[in-house]
Length: 470
Image 1 (cartoon, rainbow, N blue to C red):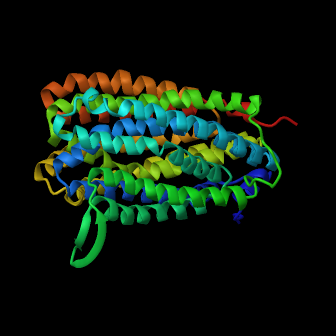
Image 2 (image 1 turned 60 degrees about the vertical axis):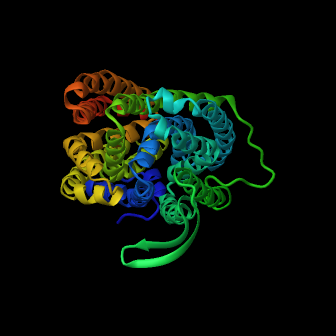
Image 3 (image 1 turned 135 degrees about the horizontal axis):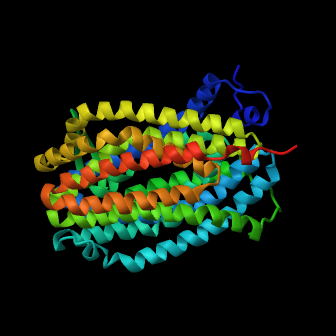
């Protein structure tokens, strides 16, 4: 019978069957998948509300979205350096150590995220022009990007706390709070984006006060939701979670040993995330000359596809926790077992999601935008990329496994080579003949290639080196 306390199971010495490992992985990943689903729904809501303002408004957001993801991804890399160490400490039963690591991570991540916010502000006023955007959308792009980078410290604390709670095995509260963020985002967006007046939601009509800030309002609405959830998440971690909470009077200065380990994990992860996000920015630069319809379709297709890979990222978080805690407990065979189960689950679930998305894609785009040209082109390019979802699932979950094992260097090398040598090269070749479809054909080929590389790396990993001696 499977115990409710995952950490206790991992720290125990009994072996687990494939069925038991699968059940644990599923149970642990469900709250994370719900959190991911809520995050995706939030993106859908943002996209649909901005889409209601017209194709130019959607293009304005789409133009700078990939750069925002780059900033977010680099901040997230700093977070991994501490959340992985917490998973290892929790698995080893070192409560005081995990608390100290958590406290140190708060300080380091705040300092780094403030630096990134300042960097973003300095870049903001030139960014739309550097990306090849049209003058007609530059103003809205600047406003949206500026607000998004100014909240980097809030984003960092929200994501850091969520990652640490997951590493401690507390997936449930993260799922609940991330779901709440989705509803808060919808409420705040209505208030910030649209002016006061009667709103229509299907057959329902209601009066809603509003500031009518348009594209800038979408960024402000998301920021407000992020702030509320971040505050609650910090309270939960600092005062209610046993392996993280900060005791009164205790001081946790930044230690060289912890910082050094964090850098060894975070720097390769930063390279990996920068490679992915940088490729997205370069892809936007390739797409921008095709016009605002193509920019909007490209942006909406990425948003629509997120519904497919959402379960993969939920399983990635569970994989990092299960593998990380197993390695902390010195159980290398169990870590390998969890790795195999979670990757297999990711491939199966994302394949099913891709099949479903193929048929519902027209309806999804009808929800996201009223522009028929954007809907038709977005549906066409998304269906091309859906062929790669099983291998995309393998790469997502395998990256979480490697992160849990502290092996972020291999993951970063694979991503760097795959997206820049394969995807970008092919996109540059194919865009001239096939337009936006060529960019997405390149993406499909690269995702299949990346998934194969991750499966090879996972198969070659020497798990025995993690076994506790004695």
